[in-house]
View 1: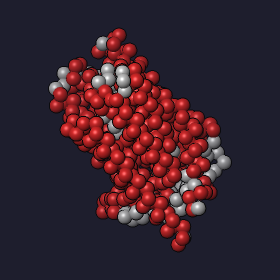
View 2: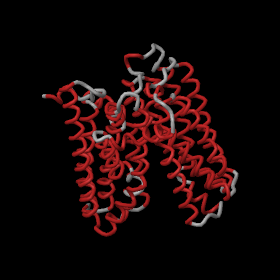
View 3: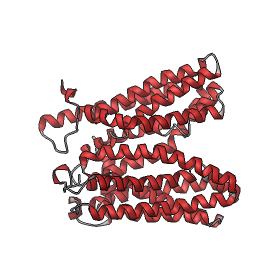
View 4: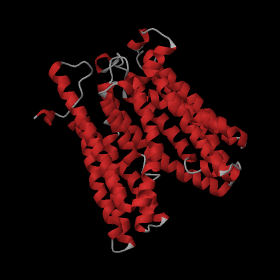
Length: 435
């Protein structure tokens, strides 16, 4: 883990001005992302003339670029500093949308690679970046604030992007991409200012390690050979595949086909989910801080289990209005679980990372997150198609059971660590956890 923590915080570090500045930059870049979120696939196909296979190739390259570079970016951040790497990532992200705004199909491959690589690098170093600037004790709050802001700005950006594309046609699409690119640059500039105003961060302890391609590869792969941390990676994968990665790709199809819900109804459910995140996230952060990250994650999984019962009841509703009401209840319950997870998972990661390895370990969870988003529809939709709602719900229940096993294993490891003295940071738990 990085040498920087609450005990070494400078008075200027993590102050309100820095937090507000960082979150302002985050809001700008997520608003820009929201502009193109619902438009990219349509723009590639209808205005750049790419076939369906070409559109699929764009998203595949985007994902592959981020997945390939992600673990190496994390290892590099452990040996250098996360701040400059994060700034460089925003510069790379700026290029992709601007290439698409030029309107040339030949540039789409390069656009996908730039956007994917920049995104992969940024999320690889996000956790150590937040720790170095705001302190470890504020990590959960900062992640929760980002999640809350994203829910609002992505939604607002999507609406605005749709209006621009609908009213201006191809020019509206290009305008959205032309704004999206500089939004990353604005975030990078704000991030530079935040890093300058914050206290100087010592280079991570891992920077003293010998350099070489073999050691770099070993550092990148270390989280995947750590028997204890594999439980955290399993937990991340399960939370994404059977939860976070489904709300926009799988849930709409499940609601439409199992309850014959119209597209407008599905949109209402997703809107309820977003509003829940915005409204509940602040309370969820306080709850997570009170009960500890482990118990917060356990509560989130139990909440999602309750959501399965609500989802199971949707097709049995007597009419369309009742189905919409129940489905909206599912969106609300699922959103509460999301709010409990957002401030809780990365503190668990930090607690289980060896000294000087926070960035590499955090990057590995980001890698699993990206893979989970790809796997979720590939696994869950075929099960729903062949097994119906019942088969889908059983699969979800099995996934949540796996999450419970992972959480139990991590809790047992935390208990053993407290008994023999911490080899890593002791995992924060609620005061009642030992009773």
